[in-house]
Image 1: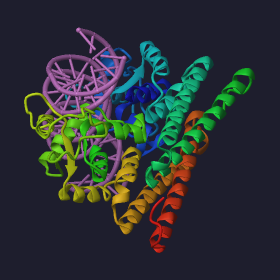
Image 2: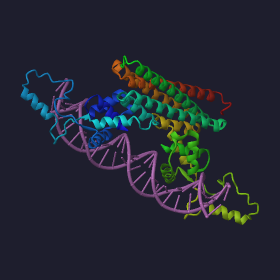
Image 3: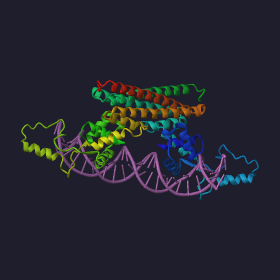
Image 4: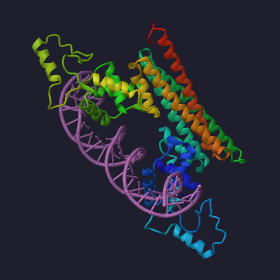
Length: 206
Length: 206
DNA sequence: GTCATCATGTAAGCCGTTACATGATTGC
DNA sequence: GCAATCATGTAACGGCTTACATGATGAC
């Protein structure tokens, strides 16, 4: 679900669609990239659902590069700010802000299925940090269980067909088991860190 | 593409849809399982394209359990055999056989993109063994290149955003790098084995 | 005779993609 | 003035899923 990424990124700061896509690509690379064709419809849907709203108002958005025209009067600046968005004929930038409803949705998304690798990656990257420690732990534990089931299934297959497996299929299954085991021990590490950070109320960062 | 799995399995022996699904599930587990809703339409499409054809004819199919009705006359047996498939009102089993065109398609599928993990797994499991050694090597090398690019992209991201990365995102990226490196060394192993088997024309099995 | 499993298919819908269309802003 | 990039969206299509509909066969 693309919602995880959108809401997770908006939770940190207001963004418009184009920036959202850039951030996503820029954090997780082309494998998790989304296309405009799914991003904009998703934003509109989330707006209809009340999970996000337009964050026009004040010059909240005016990003890094403020043109250096040293001598703009307050009136001129106001004009430029106004021209930036309210226009409805030509499309202007449209920054979104997450709503309380959207935040609720975001924590709900942490309780969703964790068996799809891509979905899990998005949940971990964008949802996890906004949740309460107990919810984080439940989330990580659920993922671990899911991987343990995957591992068990692979083992059953190898036991069942043991010798009669094609060389390539066997190698694939073995490597898959190996990878899954590595994922599980990575999760163990994440879980341990989580415990450590919760017990020591000190440095919650880094 | 589901075609890889279908053609690869049919290359080994004639199968009907239901068995095809079972084999697939049984070899690679639920992660790669396909649903009837995509399997049957795919089979029909492949038949239209001439990549597979119905393998009715002789009792080619009549599987393991031949009912032990000791006293059936030849005529009765023929009747039963006939009733098995030609019927077009009620649906009977419909076993498929791969055609030369299908075999050509199968080797073509080995030259397709290798950047999607699931597709690659199917290609490796069901296509690879039917290809000539040089095609196998090209296939494995292409996959390796693809993973090396993935690795490089991850490294760029980490270098670019280095310190400013969220704990979870960083951990995800690092683990991803690790996994990709492990995939690459697994491929190296497969490639080495391929070389070894090609050079020693002896035991091509196991 | 009824239940599980075998067996084939269709229909609706989800979630995403690519390609297209449009236009504003900025740098040179 | 022109190209690159920023920015938003629509349309068509692709591939897969779930749910539904149908019926045969074999075990008990």
